[in-house]
Image 1: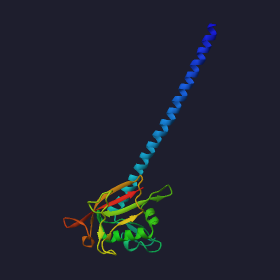
Image 2 (image 1 turned 90 degrees about the vertical axis):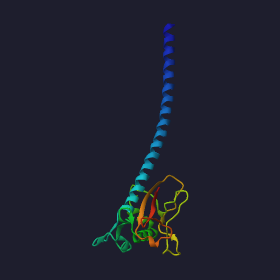
Image 3 (image 1 turned 60 degrees about the horizontal axis):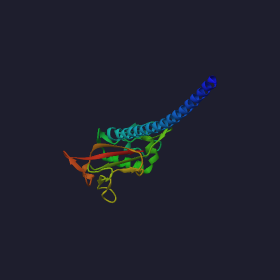
Image 4 (image 1 turned 60 degrees about the vertical axis):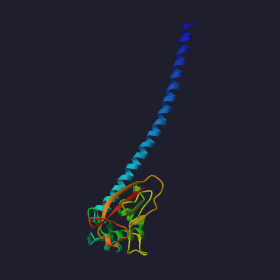
Length: 207
């Protein structure tokens, strides 16, 4: 009789242990999935921020360059449209001082072939494919109330100097701003003038 009770008690403990382990494993799996999702979102946000920063550096700090295999230079704005030409569309005369001519040709190039410009900026590779929107905005501009920098030479006069790329979606994205100078304030409608030079915000949005 004592032996039978001992066996029954042992069986009950084993069943309790199995149920407890099952509950623990189920809870562990649920928590693991939640944590993986959270870290996935963080990794995605970090990746987007890196791409937005990278594009802002290319545009605001580099003059750009072009090559057709036999000739090359930094005046890509005069050559990007020629056959068999690749180019890096930097906008800078010097760090954070942008060339009006380069800005206009970057606008033209992006409007002409958005996918090519996206690839040249490193946003389209075999492993990734990001979209972008790039603009020049006044210092008073905010993400919720954008105020674009306007030029006098547009058709009609008062058109945005730079406002290119895909429409900004209401989804996860990264936004990076750089304070920049424009080398020709006479062509602008609404510039902020500091020390005799036009100041604006270069806004890069990537998603």
